[in-house]
Image (cartoon, rainbow, N blue to C red; front, side, top):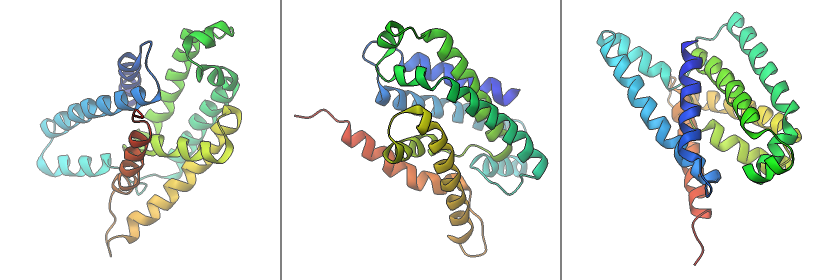
Length: 213
C-alpha cells in the first residue's frame, strides 16, 4: 500500500506538470524526469536517515533493481496484478487511441476523459507499485519499450499493449543476463543496464523532437 500511494502520487504529479493546452508526449517525458528526481531525493533522504550505513547501502543497491530476491509466491501475486491491469487497459484501448488526438478531440468522440484518466492512473500505479516493491526501481523501461513496440506493431493500443508486455519481458530478461555477465563474478543492478540503454534513447527522442529551422 505504501508503494501504491507513492506511485499514485508520482503519477498525479506528472499529470499536473504535463497538463496544458500545448502539452504533448515530450512534456510528459520531461515531467516524468522532474518527478523522478524529486521522489528519488525523498527516497534517498528516508533511507539514509532511517537505518545504519550497511542497511542504507543494501537498500540503495536494491532500489537500482534486482531479480535475485524474487520467489515464486511473489511472482504469483505479480502475475495476478499485471494480468488484471492489462485486461483493464485492453478494455480501454479505444479510449487510449482517442487520447492520441488530444483531450478535446477525445471528449468530442464521447470519451469520459477525466474518469478514464483516473482509472488508468490507478491501474498503472498499482502495476508499477507491485513490481517496484518486489524488484526495486528499474528506470527507463517505460520510456524505451513503448517506442520500440510502436515501431513493431504500430500505434493502435489493442496491439500495442500486448506488444509492450512482450517486448518489455524480453528486454528485462536480456538486461538481467547482461547485469550478470558484464562484470566477472559480480552482479550489477539491472537499473544500471537499463539506464545505459535508456539514456541514449532518451537523447535521441529529444534530438528528433527539436524544432526544425
